[in-house]
Length: 121
Image 1 (tube, rainbow, N blue to C red):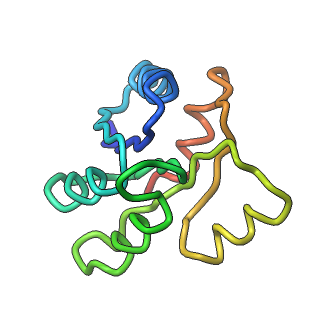
Image 2 (image 1 turned 180 degrees about the vertical axis):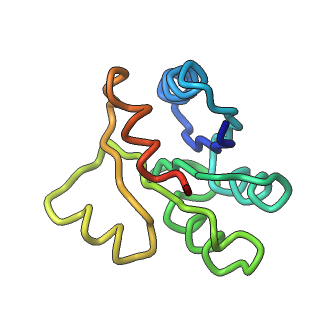
């Protein structure tokens, strides 16, 4: 069983994502902004972080940068989970430090297997 942090400020997106992954057997932690994500990441062992980009308090890009520059947390894969798929954005996100990219809205039939591709081991 993997421990996955899902970070999204949209309650419905957060709920759907979490339920889908819980049904696949993962333990899920939740955060609604980048600041909460950093706090959880620094205090809980995690296998993966799914990070929305546009959120209040701290956006996903800033949170990812913080996580990736911290020696304690830089090993955790951070995957962008976003509905804002502009042309070329996927490449920009990967170049900026994200370990992967998943489009929203998620497809509940394939989401868990897509997420599994980013899990270590």
